[in-house]
Image: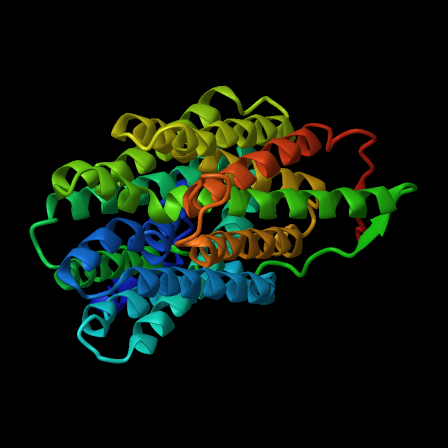
Amino acid sequence: MRHVCGWDVALLIVTATPSTREVVAIGVLSLAVAMGIGRFAFTPLLPLMLRDGAIDGPGGAEWAVANYVGYLVGALTAARFASDPRRGLRLALAGVTLSTVPISLALHVASPGFGMLLRAAAGVFSAWTLVCASSWCLPELARRQVAYLGAWIYTGVGVGIAAVGTFVWLGGFQTASALWLQTGVLAGVGTIWLWLRLPVGVRSPPPAKLSRRDGAIGVVDRQWTMVLCYGIFGFGYIIQATFLPAMAREQVTNPLVFGLAWPLFGMAAAASVAGAARWLHTQSRNRVWAVAQALMAVGTVLPLASRSLGSLAASAVLVGGTFMVTTMAGLQFARERVPANPTPLIARMTMAFALGQIAGPLLVRSLTGDRWLGLDAFDVANALAATLLVASAVAIWYADKGKAGVLPVRG
């Protein structure tokens, strides 16, 4: 009998075809690592970095924008993995770890550019992860005749946010530098498991060529409507997603109190996606997207009425409870529109989302110190976000009117 060594076992683990549950688990954990750490660990850690004097307010905004710019670059380049999204997923997850661990050092380096560079890199890898995880998991589940399970992978974002937020909340007595190092290690552990479980071997077949039915120009127009509305979504959620714990810190300085805002945001995100996956999977994707975007508008309005902890908590629930439902429904709607090769459309939508979320912090920073009609920078940004979210929700609701098909050419 041939001796089986450790490398043989490792090879068997890597090349084994994952079960359906494992496909969902890969999607969930990939998004938890990339978004919970690569994208959003900064949000609960920002108040602690401010507390430690490791960064100031303008510097925090610059680090946030650097991450969003990186996310834009990632969205622009993610389509290169269309033929092999698993390869992109592996690279992206390793990159999240390698760009997170050194932030602990960046807080002790005099040059602020090092930290900005790391956050920009994390943004690139996070965008790659979202696009590649969606582009592999959703078609793989559809191939297995269980496409409805695709919604569950987006619970990973909320799970990651809640887990990291709780981790930072419980560890708030430590320095921000120590917590950055620990979150980087957590990303590495998750990445190792994912590398072992992602199948390797033959690449996915090249995307089918597309032919257009009569009226396909309308399809292109509606795709750009989707892209624009998804960009508005990026602008609409980002104020709360970046500054919610900092706004809560203005009300109370105890990290065990203001630190709860971000875990609450994440738990609302995970619970809402799970609920949508369980009870709304038979509903039209664009209608689910539209309702979620309208509810998000309500969440952005609440801080205009009051900055109390109760109002901020309600905003966290409404925005956190809709932003991943919007992501899930929007990306699923994109796959329905271009089933043969959804990666380019998903990448364009992610690019628009990135532009929207870059605009949010830049607007806040440009208005900081000024008041418009008695409103401060946060209020102006939230008022504009609410208006745009409502308008885009109406457009999304009617996005399936006169639907024309874009069919794959078999050959």
